[in-house]
Image (cartoon, rainbow, N blue to C red; front, side, top):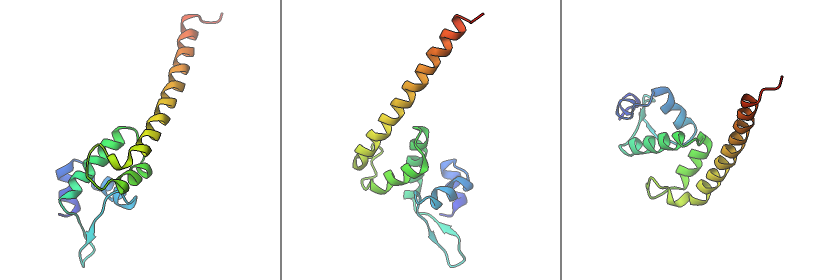
Amino acid sequence: MRIGELSNRTGVSVRALRYYQGKGALQADRTPAGYRIFDDAAVRAVDHIQTLLSAGLGMDIITEILTCNSSGSPLLDGCRERLMHERRRMTADIDRISSARTILDQLLDNPVR
């Protein structure tokens, strides 16, 4: 399928699909005229990319994870340690934000006069 059809089937813009391909997370063949041609597995790959983006991961990490995932499992069993590392990073970020929010709450509850 061409990139427009992949866009229609996944709900992801053509521009984003080109970006995913440029980052190496999405594979395409080329016609002699230079058009991108995707197989049906690209729909699943785009779905995985969207899921990982919504989980807060960046494209470089997503590309790394998709590269090590050979089973096609949405749980990405082959990349468990990398995912665990990202989860720990996110937890630390959440803890820092929560702490900052607590400080703001205290300032709002007890304004300095």
